[in-house]
Every structure is written in structure tokens, then in C-alpha cells.
Image (cartoon, rainbow, N blue to C red; front, side, top):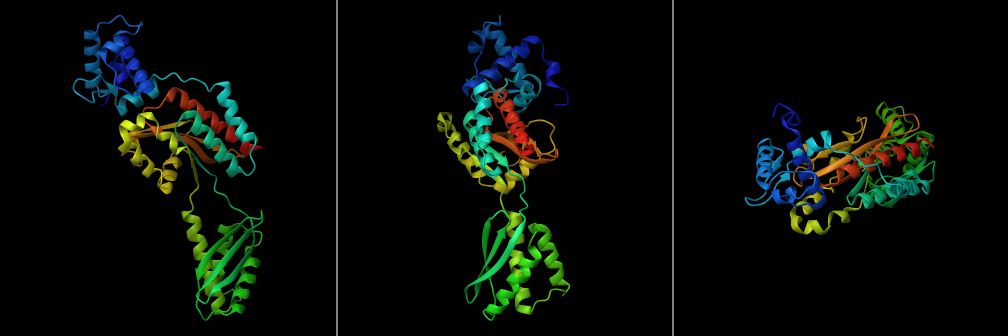
Length: 348
């Protein structure tokens, strides 16, 4: 379609379309002409309504899942409704309070994000999801501890007291002295820096032969750096809560779709890329069904909104994932409110 379907609708057609979409989003079942004719705002016979529904189907806005069934909106129809006809409802005082209470009781930012996401999931009856700001901890110490003749444990300690361990393979001929030398050198060069800058600096020194290390110590640090670099690049930056909400009463009739969606939710890296598309949005962004490749198989929708830090930079995205049959008018402003609340939190 090259023209805007809204321009091809008269008031009667628009009313019928709106009623069908709103009824479908409320009940999840195709809507028949008799159901529409009972609407008190319309004065149309079932026959006239069927003609209008046929016109809307020819425009690609409605579809009939079965020959004798009513109509339901297509993804194009949902997009038209969301962009041009939907009247949003602001979150209630109770919904706003539930979200703000979770943020007010936060400890570390990750805990606050997880709590807010769980609350958003519960309120929307969807899976809540948040992209966590990339954290660049300041480092304090790095040490290598022998586990066996062929393995050592690389221990990285952050300035905030956090500790992370990684197992690295070593040459069985590596002496305990080489482990100590590598630990002392790495701690000296890492201390006070974030991981990215420290890894780059140490790697350059070793490559240029400027590091005061013997061959065994250099190789140990090189392997350790490779482990940390790979881990940092692949580490998920997502928190997902409320997948159980996807297994509601309606899911019984569409188990394959729900199973596919749950499998898609396991692809953290792909979800991160999808949410990254919402980072540059000036407002809440809505992806419906096959509009995004990740959830095209399950026919699911994503509603996402970016949040910012104290300097006004976008640092993450919060949102929900659920079936295309969402109460968009209620969930969209709820996601938007959560993003604004997170922005206020990041500024405090």
C-alpha cells in the first residue's frame, strides 16, 4: 500500500475498525458483525458492518482466521491503530506508586533495575526487560593463583569490592615465581583504571616488548587479558523478569507461539541489539510482530523506552515483551513512566 489507509476511511469505517481492534485487544478473539452491531454508538445493521469489514480486509487491516469467524487486526492494522487512533491512558496512581516504591528502595543500581523491571512485568502482564548501563568498574588488584599444573585462576578485584574469577590454561612449566611476577605487574598497571583502558594499555606494552616480564609471565597475562576481553564483549547486559506472565490462560490456545517466544527470550545478545534500536528514540518505541526479525516467528510485540544518566546521555532501555494482543493504550505510558523514573534515579 502506498497511500495512508486512514485517508481511505470515512467516519463509519474508522469507528468499526476501532471497535474491532479494541475488542480484540481486550478479549483476544476475532470480532463478528453481530458483536459490533450491539455497540450503542453505531446505528448499522450486521449486513452493513460486514461490508465495512470486507473493505477493511481488502485494505490489509483486518484478517479472518477462519472462513466463518469474525475479523481480527493484522500487524498493519495494529500499527495503524497504535500510530493514528489509540488514546493512551496515563498510569494510575497505584501503578506509579508501585514503580516508584521499588526505585526508592534500591541499593546497587542493578538491584533497582531488576526490581523496577519485575514491577513493570507484573503491572503489564508481560515479560519485563531492561538493558543495564555498561558498567566500567575501577580496578584495584589482579592476581593469578595456581589451580593445577596446567591451570590458574585469574582473580580481578574492583575498587567497589567486587571480585570476579576466571580459569586460564597455563604452560605446566610456568613457575610460581612467574605467577607472582604476573600478579604484581598486572595489579600495578590495572590499579585505578577501568578494564577497557587497562587491557589496551597492558596489551600494547606486551606487544611492544616494553613490559618488564619474562616470557612465562607475559604469556600468562596475555591469556588472562584474552579471557577478560572475550568475557566482557559477550557478557549479557540485560535483566529479564516475568516470563511466567506469558503463560496465561490465552497461552493454552497458542502454546507453540509461547514456546517460540520463550526460546527467543534466551537469545540475550539478539535482544540487546533489538533494544539498542530504541536508544535513539525520542519517545517510547513499539515493535509489532514481524517488524523486528527476532520476534517475527512468535508474532510478539516489544514496547521499549530509553532512559538517561545525570548528563543526559542514554545509558539503557526498559520495556516489555508480550503477544501482539497487548493493551497498548495502557502499557505504552506505563513503560514511558518507568523510563522517566529510571532517568530521575540515574540523576540522583
